[in-house]
Image (cartoon, rainbow, N blue to C red; front, side, top):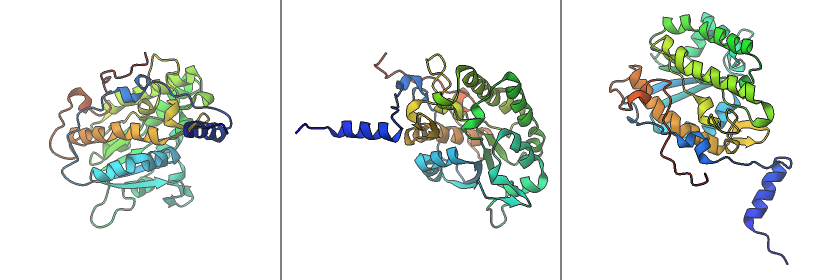
Length: 293
């Protein structure tokens, strides 16, 4: 009887699960794992509350390690998701696309619910409010659509500036798998991420942008640039982050958050990460350990 290895069985099962399609991973040097996460000044000296408005991509990140990373860092985590936070006929949790955010944040009765969601006692607002769209928002099909995205996000600035007591954390849109996007759309999604982490993040001291796109996408200059790193997704046609993708994000996000809350003045003790301590600053490439090139 012919011996079949465990690895062969596992590979066959993966191919069947993906409908006959095999995930072909890219080398580590083409991913965010080749970037230094920056120095970590440690968990904040006091507990901070974080509210996150998100959908299924956020769930995958949380389940894959981000929730545990936040808890270990002393963050009181809350989220609004799908059917939650209904105000009249408007369900805040069901609206996380770019055109939804102006209504959610700029309508006082909706924003009041967001900033105090699940809080008890004397605390009236969260220290941080984080929000993101899911990966379909990275399918930016024209320059006009990209310009419209920017207009929607700029419209949030008056609300953010009126609430300097809250740190607002937009996340860049997560990337799409190769099957659902093309080079031009991926380039526009990368451009939107660069705009958010650059010009937009500099618009007010209480805005800090984490580059989720960069954490999950193939780095620029490689064949699959600006698409989801294959091993960071759940399938060749499923852009939800895998456990590996969640770990890659958590690896960058936790030290970034520790630097950011200090840079924003939420807690004392400035981070010592140099330029990378600034909200939205890009990480530098790590020394190469990849021997495949």
